[in-house]
Length: 78
Image (tube, rainbow, N blue to C red; front, side, top):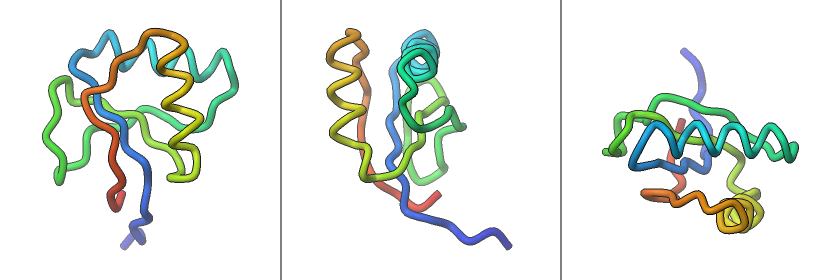
């Protein structure tokens, strides 16, 4: 069984916003990857950005600079 770790999970209202997050993070070298929304979270589009909890501030600033609006930003075991 794979051990779960505490991760930062950013959810989005639409798939378009999730894809914009992925593109922006790849272009800027920001940490993380797209994942299916974990079962413990309910979210609109079914995709979420997953990263280390320490990167929360940097990712929130990045989203603000690029006009990406998250549905939610939370930490959970993934």
